[in-house]
Image (cartoon, rainbow, N blue to C red):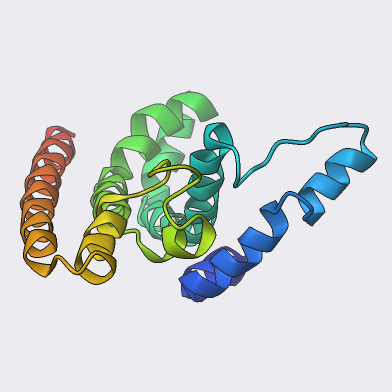
Amino acid sequence: MRSVYFTPMVLSSVGVSVVWTRVLDDEGPLNQALRLLGVADPPGWLSDPAYALFSLGSNVSWQLLGFCVVVYLAGLQGVPRELAEAAAIDGAGPWTRFRRLTWPLLAPALTVNTVVLLITTFKIFDHVKVITNGGPGTGTTATVAFTIMQEGFVENRQGYASAMAIVMLVIVALASAVALRLLQRREVQL
């Protein structure tokens, strides 16, 4: 099962994006299935600004899910069985054991996942470039990294793109430091 969940993570972002672009196309398999189910006018997953960002986010989430699952699974394997057995003997039900024992012991895994995903979301470029090219329209799905690359290599404004990249670096570093501090404080309090 670990391999099944982790496989999307090791696949190329561009390859995954090409496949999802075909699936979510207006005449793709998803809309064809919706038509078979009786939906007369299925949404334009990539062409409608109301759905494009959701579709892009679903693609990225699907690819990153494996990483999160593996980190949480490692955290769950780190929960001592003796503590769970002791809690059960003391009369704690499954929900209480999860809330009072398992979830607090998963705090380090939550910290790792939160910080890694925070950094990853700031640097998403390839999915946006392949799936929507920043559209539909003007910048509906354009991320910071996509905008930096567009400014530097399409608009040929390398100085401006470099300045944007430095600002992004500072924002990511500050956001990561704040998240790390808050989440590590939660770990210490337990």
